[in-house]
Length: 454
Image (cartoon, rainbow, N blue to C red; front, side, top):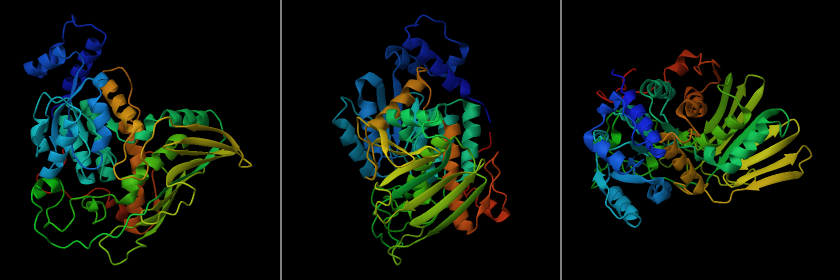
């Protein structure tokens, strides 16, 4: 496969020079891979970034502020979704903020073929995340990639290889990495705030309700079911699959609640504890609520990860029981030899070993915690960090090579659950030693959609 990293890198080099006023520099010959029109767009707009959004569902609102803020100097070129109504709603929403109309598109492949587009926001269903990232990098684009960044561990491995090969900027959408309060307290933890850290408890409690039992049905008007499936094996449409409930209807599209929401809290836990791959994974999960409804995943799960140095991360995931076991709907508790820290999207609290509150930091802005889609100041900062990294002014707060390590914890939960056994893990590679478990390390692709090795 041809290495086109010079395209992405050359554009970033130019944007860096343009941003500091070095408009008179001699452009390297590698920039010739860009179209003349793209040259004009960049030069005429200084450091403007042309973006497209793929997947116009519940995460859309978190992109509106950073994309439309004039100081970010971004132009929204495409709104892409396989459902007509999603495109129309998104156009109306952005129309209230923009003085121009982005193009509406059904097929992401047409968007990726447009040389004017510099970066993609990928908020599609889970099974599309990594394959679209591969396609985007092949096309010389950068990407803001929502969690889960992959559908399975094999795709995570490929993501790292792709990014190294093509040099694209890939930001994982774990927005708490851009929270000033989280950055502050995690730094203090690393400096010994609560002594030697030995355990973290990550949790999520939500009151999701009953879902319909999926039955074969006509494809909804306006939905491109063929493109919705994309890389996944083909099957007939079933009622209510396309609109969010794909999360719970089997493993073709979703990654269960661990991949859906556990990613965020487990990432904070791993970040604070400074651990990578675990040695041992144990899970206990089941479907506990509405046992006759259409939900096919676990809706309740407990997982324990044992890391080198006898450090432990525990995950308490409750999708359909909103009881606030730890006093909050979601968050992460970090235990150390000298105290404890609670961290969530609203800030942090530090306690001494006797449980007395010592200090706290409250977020100035608000980020949605349990509302579908989320969004808020933290998401805006995370997206802005992505833009400024493309320009060479900042470094990614969550680069993909770190993001996949956190994502791997959620994949290990799902593999252990599906294999119905604890897992022993190679702490260097993250791979499991069990042959049966390794059979579900990847997934089946629709013929013609298989990722290409790089």
